[in-house]
Figure 1: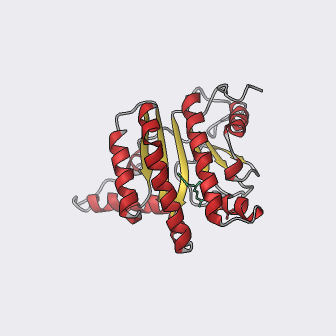
Figure 2: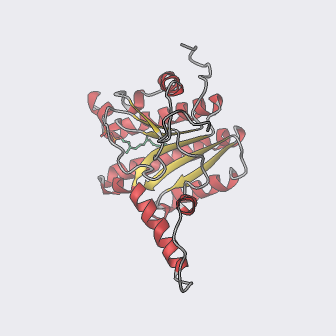
Length: 244
Ligand code: FPP
């Protein structure tokens, strides 16, 4: 196995992570849930840095689901506060390292002060070519598909006979349309679910589930996951490995 800082090869082009287990991490230590989220934000920083260093083209993090709005308001506020801190603290590093920040989800619900930081950093980093860091915020996979279809229907009504929608068109209408296909989805905390994450985009992704709670998930384990991924044989529904 490689040294901690060494680059695993080959890395997935697009890795997506369901960051789960912050609450359990806190409970195991007799701490409030918010403490788990705060430690989880440290993992976010480490994983983003590692992916950038190792040449991952796109990293998508499930930071806040559409369903998470139903959590107690104090927890929602704590999560929004951590997001604001992340955007302010990491701004310099994101820009210096040529990272493009992107966000997917029903962003209209994000509180205005956080939204302002988010919009500003997305605009400032829009031309960066190093890695696309996508934060799934106020996000749901089904909601995302519904919104794309409704958008298409609304524009289709301008024509007498709207053209049938194609797979390529729907892919492009989704907010993930600017990203490469998802190669690998990682979920921490031992849960074996997709939880409404990138439902359309995961069609040919590989999955990796680890019992590690998100606040304990750092680059050493990510490197091991990537090494496992590099040994997978992807067939895309065919009988022998296609030359993609
Ligand atoms: C799931 O753990 C995690 C979340 C709902 C939020 C993820 C947020 C962070 C990692 C920190 C802030 C994010 C950024 C981008 C700075 P859970 O609360 O459902 O854990 P549990 O299942 O153990 O209760």
